[in-house]
Image (cartoon, one colour):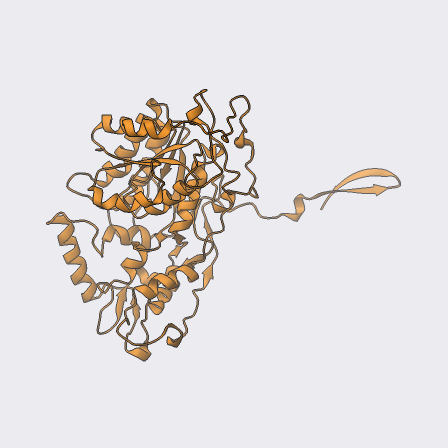
Length: 445
């Protein structure tokens, strides 16, 4: 850990502004129209007179915002986007990892030299977690799993490990904790596709565990994420889902009655970085969803059409509500890989199908915040998904230019679902004043 100490306590230059007596309090700026840029990133709360903790620089990867952030789970799909956004704003980053160093090598180029530190840890070793958060004032937990492995079950990954990170962070004096959960997380969730679906149930228990150990933690519930090398579009466009001859694709209930709001992964990373850099969001709940809601059958039709499934070029696509023999065969082999050979990350996973394709995104409609409170305008699913589906095209062997492909109808948008619908405008509650012969008379109507 000597490297982490030296990277934080480098000498101050003459043009650095040290604000020891008066530090701007950013917790009062909570309006939705506040502007975010490299010049007005909220400054962290200064808790000591150590000049190495003060913000310095004009913004960018060579600057320092005053935050030292430990990001757990950065080796996953969302890690690259989150680390890149945090590094771009000048945060010093510590990345605890338990995989081989080969799988986190891409993160090195996101930060400037001396701004990032890799530290091996084990979730079962509390001392390694303490060392990983010892010099940090913000901790981000991206750890989560939808499969059971030989070493950790879903309950371990989604409940016990977040509880341990939250408890140790509180004991080590970490100021803020950002915990990433999932849309629809509920301790009493009832699965529709599986009899004993555990992902959303354990994610809900994980939120309770984190809040129990770290009451001021920020909870983020994202919808299904898509992007480069994702799980959502990659699962949909794999050849194991589509029967090569008849073009059959099994989708739960044919995609009818299931509504999703997919989120672009770069929007998710930008949202996490702005939560980290703004202390006023401590203790708040966020729901990260896309700008529009779609029925899942519309999403599936758009994805497969953009992936080159057209009758004109002999690549058929037919959506079925009952499992076809092709799907049953490959899903059984994937189940064999996860259970017998103890492998993970199969292309067809029933737990994934349960909480993604068989569960609707329902907003709470309460005091939860979203992208608009962070000043973020999320990308449209129609624009971003079309690009990634074209990369994974089924008709890649057909020599057609992009503009020669048949036109694809945009997915129809549906109303957003709420658990507690927001209060609508009620004209009967308007109070007016009428003047009768110079007297004020209160009237309603």
